[in-house]
Image (cartoon, rainbow, N blue to C red; front, side, top):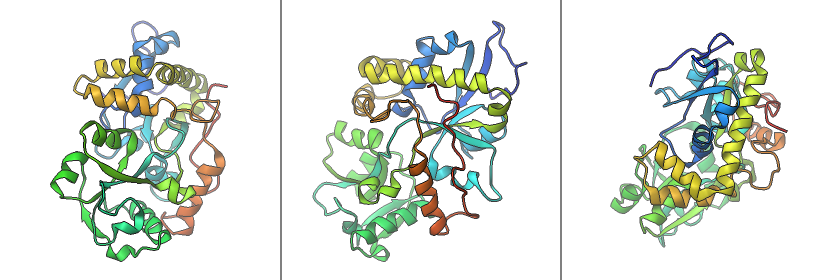
Length: 317
């Protein structure tokens, strides 16, 4: 897919629609369903927008959005942290939460004692070797009375969790339950699982989020609001019609497993908005609590200021 530098009102398609480039964080999955629904159902079209959805470059969506080559993208509060403060700061802002609560945690083969963090002692954990990741794991293991030094860290980027667990190349893997957790169920693999937010509430941070380019937000706030309003319609359709939404995603990405998509869509239907009335809303207290934890544990180059990196100002009321 082509990548275009699409800043400014002069970037219109032949039908006079405002061109928007949206960069994913990964291959298409149910985190993104509302985006594809908004495209297929004509919500972007109704808003006067021509939206191009592109795959992320190797250095991630933040780099592309920060450079102004995409107006919007998908990121995560934890991986955004280096972009929010310090030398690596990028001109990006989180403008909507795609899922209201952190659905990530640790999956393992059932019955091997890893249903709680202390059980990771003596077991092989597949690590991305990222400082925040390892600090979070250390925190939950120690909160559960375990010794983190006894966890065997195996550097590995697992792309097929079912195969990794079955082959015993890893005993425990950090997953997003809505996709990889559901995948283990669809595959008939019995597992144990614990969620980070259930061990330490400060880990109920926002993941994933929609980020936007700051210059674009400043120059074209009405376009940003129009885009997010159309996106909201897409996610609210997915909430109300998970089966139809799953079909739309599979049509857009036919390489996906239809059974997995349908089950994952059902799981996420009441989690996109959860208890909030306003789609995409980011709770400042929860946002700040996680970054304060990073500050206290010296996990960023510079201290992240309060309320840095997010805004609810562009969300539909």
